[in-house]
Amino acid sequence: MVRPLSLPLLPVTTVGSWPRPEALLRARRTDKALADRLADEAVIDFLALQEEIGVDLVTDGEMRRDNFYSFVADKLDGVRLMTLAEMLELIEDKAGFERILQTLDVPAYSISNPTCVARIARRRSLALDDVRFAKAHTKKPLKVTLPGPYLLTRAMYVREASAAAYPDKEALAEDVVRILVEEITELRAEGVEFIQLDEPVLTELVFAGGKTRTFMCAALARTQDPTAELELAVSLLARVLAAAQGIRTGLHVCRGNWSRNEATLLSGSYHPLAPWLARVPVDQLVLEYATERAGGLIDFPGKELGLGVVNPRTDRVETSEEIATRVRSALEHYKPGQLFLNPDCGFATFANRAVGEADIATRKLRAIVSAARVLREEL
Image (cartoon, rainbow, N blue to C red; front, side):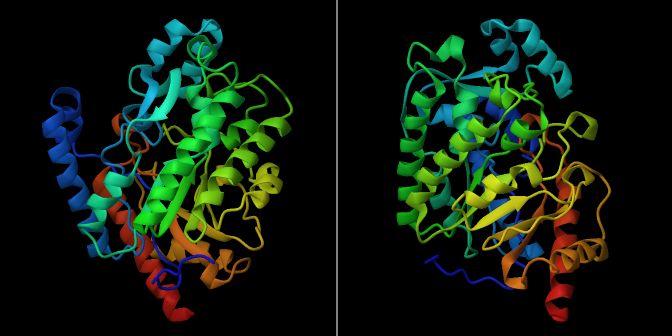
């Protein structure tokens, strides 16, 4: 039984991240104490903004994170944060990795990857302290975002750095699962209302044609058949989600959110992933649908849908009527109680590579809330 949430129909939320203030970004490079203080202020400000706008399920904006998964390097023993430029020096297939960097449309120094260099273990909680701080500054239900087990395994296992500690990625995955189970168990005891696991790299398996295109899985096997990888992902997710009984859970899957150049991002319907997503024991699928690259809506019986209704990478602010029209189409497939409304992805998945500006992101959130209110009146 999922712990009930006090939410209206068509609750509005975000996928997690929000643009960090420039002062915070500067302090992260020079002064940890100052950065911690500024992060506290940024979280409080973002929580207040969400309450003022009318967001129903809030997040802390991932203000303390370098990006949505690399932050684990600060929390785990055995993990080293490496820029893509540093990884290029390490990886044997330098030509192949350089092709990835060229495809990404991103400077090699601006995004970092958590790389396994020894046996991993929790040095401290991944999110518990952040949750306690956020809950002290809002009465709204809180969504907590965590990188999923497949993403963490694929990102962290770089053979040239990891093989001395783990003979293969499956061995590393065992410890990744253990760590996430420990984390979710603590969050559950803390009374967290919603846990979202991020697994955007799943689309890489079905759309990239066996050719690695992202830094999030630098060691991805060159195979034309993604079946084994998808089976591994579903298995890992099932084991982790077993620890979340009683908490509403979400799984976020998108096609990349590191560039405003849509041509560099993956394209394709969720159809190739549908059989596997249907098997993941999660309450809600948080999916992007505001971009044409995502294809048409798919039914997932028995699951809620976190419907992406605005594109975080564009400056144009979608109107509330555009958003309402998109939701009405989704209501042909889902009951009102099964739909949550959110942006396609975070507005600043990577702290130093935000795809949106705070003022535009704020206007987009206001438009979602406005559309939700109109639709609630209709319903």
